[in-house]
Length: 154
Image 1 (tube, rainbow, N blue to C red):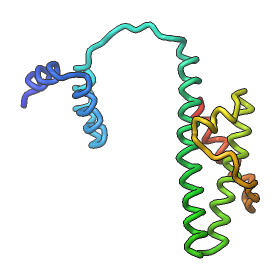
Image 2 (image 1 turned 90 degrees about the vertical axis):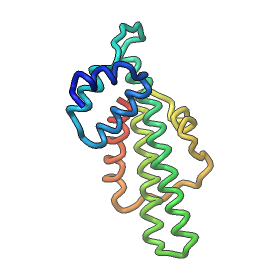
Image 3 (image 1 turned 120 degrees about the horizontal axis):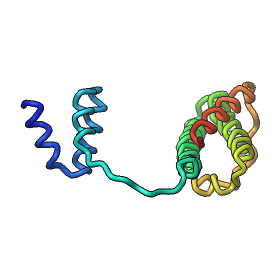
Image 4 (image 1 turned 180 degrees about the vertical axis):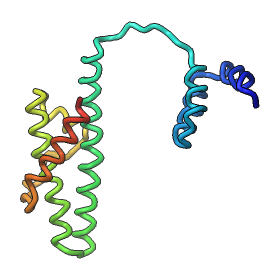
């Protein structure tokens, strides 16, 4: 198809349809197609809350979502290892990750002056787990998660 025909076709699509095409073009790393699709998206002027407010408030939600994924992945993996009778050392590795994540989340929330309980509530994490022993590379893991969580929270 010629570029002019493609532009006409894209102009008739809904924003949702264009979003699908843009996503698929990005997965294929087709920059030219992405540019064509994005140029076909209608432009509007919006009134919205301050962008820094939006970034920070969305950052807290993204932090909770990311924390939830990592938390449940590590908890489930640790439990699965225990249930299968695999190596205690391997199970301890996942327990150490949870301990480091917990400490890192506390540090990041304190730095950002947000209630860690609120983040945990959005993350749907358990409150009643026994304290987890720290692993041998605890400080290194905590630093990793502090850096990661801080970037996500904005």
